[in-house]
Image (cartoon, helix red, strand yellow):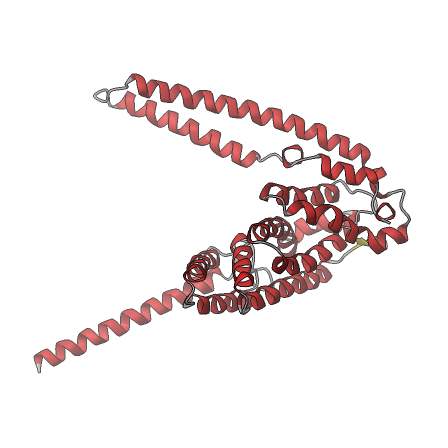
Length: 346
């Protein structure tokens, strides 16, 4: 029955590759190379402008080491990019055999469910790296327009199933599920709030087409809203659960996705209120986790992570609210000082 829903080629390809094969963290490489170069320039400039400073042998060794590391990182980046191109080229050559041999009815009926059950969910629980791999593999097949690969259906089932798995997992597995959810949700949120990105990266791809027509943006926005509401409803129930392990698992997952979820202002406010209750919990570990997450969520809110329905950022509102509160407290303080002075004079 499994091979009626996915092909052996797709199954073998998924399980034979690793994150290194399908993803190049170019931004991280570039950031580290730039940092090393700036540090070398800083040390050498400091020595040139102030001859009184001793440019010791140890300093020379450090500079040489940083230069060598930058060169090695650049070489390593080139090698990984070459390897990435080789692997993705092979996947592109094989993509027609992944699902094309299956009947359209079987693909529509059970491929998403089977692919998630036999590939994504078992592997994402293994480690954070594997969880990240699962998300990037899905979007790799999507970007390559793999025939019959229904990205929209897979993402829908993944979001609806993933949240339920939180309460059936160990704390470590819940953290891995959080990684998978974060990687997927970042992309789905970009498509929700960036119309150009949605048109180019989603609506024009086969995985987002229904009867040969790309899913309209307004319809996707509704689907995204339902996904968001479902995730928050389950997480809210987890935070209010009487089960100790459910509360911890929920906090672990929420902490893992804090930079990209919640997106809706109302859900964010509700989340802060729900977590604030746990800040007074008698269990010290729960209290500590709640305090840490509350701080992270507040920071994400102030950084502009929360959005309006029209895509606008709620950052300004949050800052304005904080500013007004600060002014109110300052006014109350001045009023108290004025009353104290009057009492003293009296």
